[in-house]
Image (cartoon, rainbow, N blue to C red):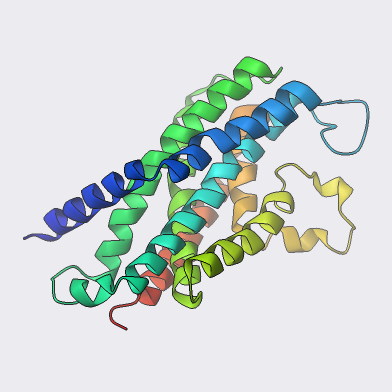
Length: 251
């Protein structure tokens, strides 16, 4: 079997595994919807009120997208590695031509498809229930690229967490511990002006920051996004390489 065939076979199996887990489907698609409804439709933004949600609604589009772009690949890939390890499946895979990089690539492609669909749903809901509007420009065509690259990055990080954690519960705890600070300290829901001056340089250390800046430039500000995409792509390549190396081969 060719490399393409091996990746396609593993991806099909991973997609079927996802659709059989109703809880995974629920949290991937409906948990972000709940957040949009609560914070976008019920709490709403207050542009002149100060504090959280003090920016126009369009400012927070990257934050809503970041919920699935960040949480889903971290927990899904990490949990998949934990399940494979607990079931001894990596030992079986070691007897096949499928490499660790191919395994991670297949699961990354599945996550890109799933999270791409969830992101489209979230974006449509944000536009429907809030006052947010999109800047209509050719740059909108790059928005799916930002989503795909960010998902790939966090799939790599999820693989590392899955390899380090000793159980599925450990993966969930580790992914939440990593994801929650990143979500709120990466120019998504919390603006840099609300952070202490000494901490603001640390925001640039978060990969999610470049996703938020780039997507906000495309959807809300109309500014430059090329630099953010280049940084995000470089980081994604590094995290995928490290994640592929971290995927267990045998126990």
